[in-house]
Length: 213
Image 1 (cartoon, rainbow, N blue to C red):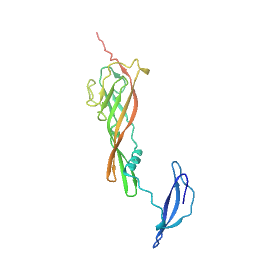
Image 2 (cartoon, rainbow, N blue to C red):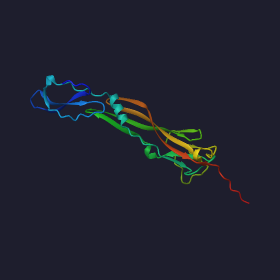
Image 3 (cartoon, helix red, strand yellow):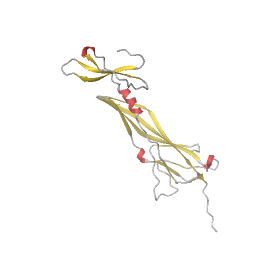
Image 4 (cartoon, rainbow, N blue to C red):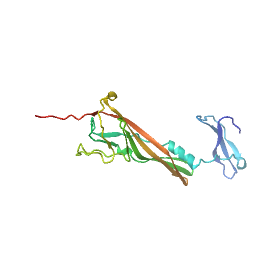
């Protein structure tokens, strides 16, 4: 059965017991189309049966699995929670619930490949021309922490106020880099990193000394 345009393939309906053949229904597939046309089933002896479509390679399945990955956007937290102060350390961290691997699997009968995205680092563009790169999600500021203490793994100290910035705030962005690997069907490999990001802004003020006397 010759078809022009979209690629055609066959679907086996049933195998008749004791007979060398099967019932087939022909359908057409193509980019962005769905074949809804009814066609009567046709009996084809085994000797005349069309060749089965080749199975996708592990690399092709890996591409499909990567396309199914759904990576969360980072949720930003900082301390001080409101206005930051010049020359006072700002602690930066992300919601730890999102800092974990995410996986997706693509499969055909007998073969499956899984792609896994693992958060590797987060880059903070602080809005004052400074970029801070952290290897992990950062440490939340402890409830009894000293205001002058710096974060042990992810923070920034603003050297000037944001008074001259648009809206008197520094625009900031946290960008998470995800390492993408895949394995299955006796093979494995890696893809280029993927990223997710979230924007925020920080108001930075000069610390005011309180005079007495």
